[in-house]
Figure 1 (tube, rainbow, N blue to C red):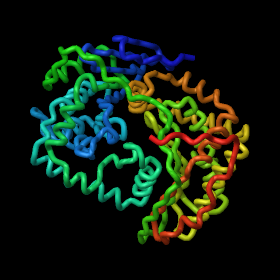
Figure 2: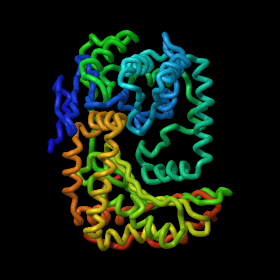
Figure 3: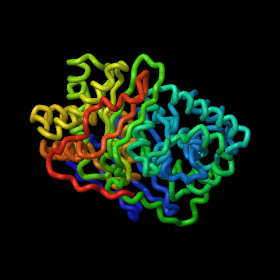
Length: 461
């Protein structure tokens, strides 16, 4: 069993052997650039990610939506590559490439055969360091993003999840939509996006992670050469950018509700409350609790709502954690006339879990499920690449499979019940999207009963 490895920001070189004889290496270049790799014996693919620890929460009122806008624009060409050149480079080798904008980071990534990794590094490095943000392409992409937002607004599940996040995290920058709004995108200027690009895309802000069939030295050499070739000056010494400050969830507000009446065959209902931040030591107990409640076909929500009552095809629970806040939710798609019943069952199962805890068989089954999913996930080079990125940007430590499983198996029933009690005592907000009356939430059951020990109210941010 390997202990967690600290990723401090001062050790220039680090190497450790992980489970399965994989080798994890980390280099901090004098410019502040961080490069992490995981060499996986026998792997025929490789995944690479270029991470910037800037997301939608970091935008000001002038640049709202710029992070997502910029993500789109970096695929539109550099001083040496057109948008078509970038697309062809991956298509002609059967590779995958894409990007994601999250609330706390942006990542540009690719998955290719191991012998094509050098090409992927060259193209992604060029995109990150030498995009031109062409004015004509800016206007074209503005329309593309507006279409993307319109598509999301046509999806009731997307609407429900976006709105419940706004309700629960409304006092926090994390509550804002990642992609901005039609109004902010329509008002965005190339200058504001360019300033965002110039301010945040710097060597000391960049983290590069790669996993699969590779060698660390080759990746480091190729990344440094590619960034230098694209115009970045890596000769200026700089400390790597620090990680976000961590802390308890600062979000406390009375329960709120929103109903969006739309002519749909199904209604989406989501209930959510403030959760745990990403580095909370109880996050493993939270994972177990969420799995027992709504994480699979044997979960309580699935069995009660789908199997016993036949009220939904999709029903689930989920948890999202950020540096200083989090969200826990339960959701389902059901017929409009069943919304209140489904919502009340979801609340009832959460409160029942808080009151009585889980059984030994549920605990054992859930640990087996999470352990198996974790092991299967690491069969993919992209999952390992993402794990390295999160370790560097979020937790500051590398937790190998064996250590992760040890932490999971240390969770007991009391820890799970304690988390359920805490969540059941927090304000539970609701969003419903579908052919329902605006007063549908008045038929939801009462607020949480008093369970466990009394919880002291957290402070407003």
